[in-house]
Length: 289
Image (cartoon, rainbow, N blue to C red; front, side, top):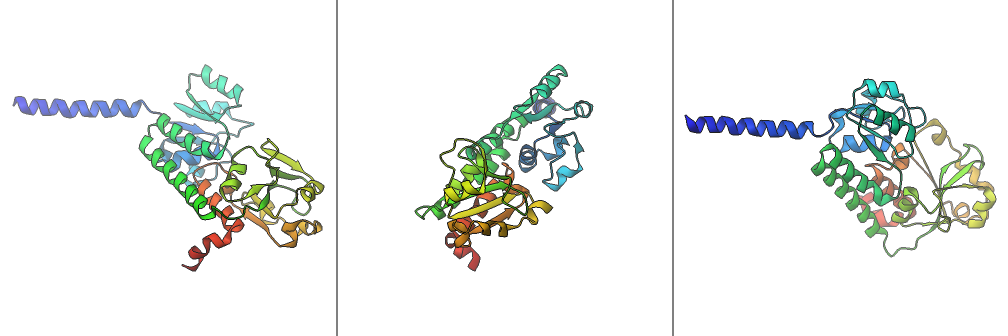
């Protein structure tokens, strides 16, 4: 009888410890940052996400969550009404941060940085929400996939590349290109390219066609989310710059999909896609399978 009572006590203790552990991690999470929302779902914390930003589109399950505004126009009342115990917000959202503090709601601060910071954020976020093992496995897989790309392109010539993430669809006006800071630049480097703006320590550069000619890229890569604007973007507009090596040699590429612009779990796929246009010969065996 005594042994039976001890057994019941042990089971009750284990149940209590598990309950305390569960309650010590956030159970109602709001994330208004697409890349972090994707991280949460990828590490298995998706069922605890109750609110997302207006621009969250992936994974499909995120579309079923309550929309709470965007980075510039967060709906504070709706966020608070969801009774979250963790809100993920951008590091520069000082007003929202103070409002969450006044409401007694914990926050997780995020800010875009370099390529290596993506997996660091995944690990930090996993620790914060209690998915340590899953986040470590996810981050390790991403690091490994990027390392595989690095091995494939290692020792190959690194073409001078203009990485464009925005411009007017039919003209060469409004060109925005990656500078030498941030995850886009790091993606290009990891994929085996050399950024033509590697000497400009900024995340983005508003480039004119004259500047594009002066930088003389051997490859031009345009990236963007899968929208009507990017799908209809006229790559033929570059033909006006006939003296540019990338134009002469027909090395102009458009890589679409929101994963290309999202510093989240799909980043290793984006690095691989970039490497496949920069160094197609490094992936010949894959295409033959």
